Length: 331
Image 1 (cartoon, rainbow, N blue to C red):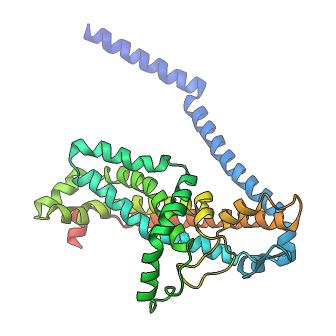
Image 2 (image 1 turned 180 degrees about the vertical axis):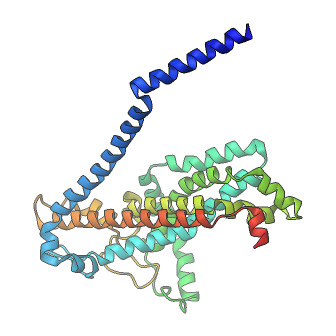
Image 3 (image 1 turned 45 degrees about the vertical axis):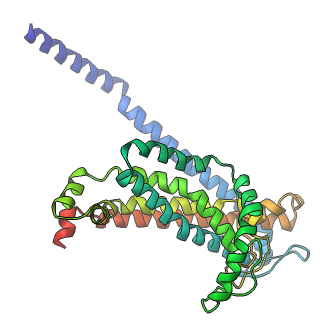
């Protein structure tokens, strides 16, 4: 009877292999996925080409370099220099990273390593719910709650630490810092969620090895968990940065929409996404103003691609340099 069963299994295996060769199942799946991947690249290239074509009028008048680095966005006189918008985008995104990433990673570490098992699911759910809040709600919350409440504290900080570069002077209600703080809160769920997934992949053997060597729980996290997860955490941070750069409505409501470069962190400003949202409805079709806004979208598109490329390079580099707990102990 066992011999008969083995014979049937062998026959079935032969038939499956023969069918796979005849129909080329693996090849079909491989080719299908390859086509999908190529289509994604084609769509991205098509978007880029369309933006570039629509931006030709303003780029032809201003010049690409002058459009990006000129500090003068004057719609009334058809002068479009996007440097204040680029600076506002970079400043608010940097503030979001500086504030949001440490909080998100700390929350992920607590949930995966320190929180009681019965609380982990609830805490993760509550943190993820922040992503479900519409961005306009964040913006309105910033306008009616954050700006009035934080303005006295911002003014005290500006007066007390005015010796620090980019700090000092009168504090405006809407400003770079409020916009960056709102963005920091908005990127916490996505950075924390990805970081949690990465932290759960740390081998149990590495944690136990650190504890066996006499490390405390916090030392084990610093020695084994975070070094093993740094590539994934860097990737999560860059994904959060991409989210912050592209945010529109919330930033539009709290940054002040001033097309000038602020001299300190509490000045009003503008971002590439905010100017598109604010002015596109007023720009007539085919006008130089509309072309300038599309060119701003093109700059935002290229900036996002550059950030994704840098993130990919960082992840690959950190993945190559990551080692086991034993390797780091020897080092």
